[in-house]
Length: 113
Image (tube, rainbow, N blue to C red; front, top):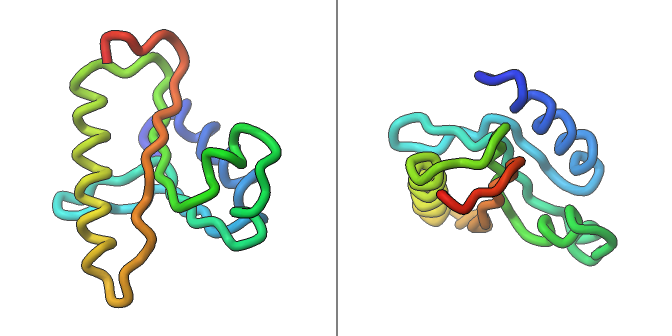
């Protein structure tokens, strides 16, 4: 974990989501060893629930990127590159794995991004 503020988000997401499905921190996405802050694949029971915002965000496979402040254009571009690479790699798996959505978590106003 490169940044201290990422550690909190990863621990928070793991604590909430581990009992609902499979949560992976630092999921590597090829080709140049990029990693999501978190990757989650819900189990069937979790996918059927819709109690709060996090439940609604995680009804299907998803990846998380956390920022301490609002990301700028280059950070958003990096996130888009990662999700596209991940979706490509996962689609090639035998059998194919669920293709994730991307959720960018941040504080502040991300208008510039």
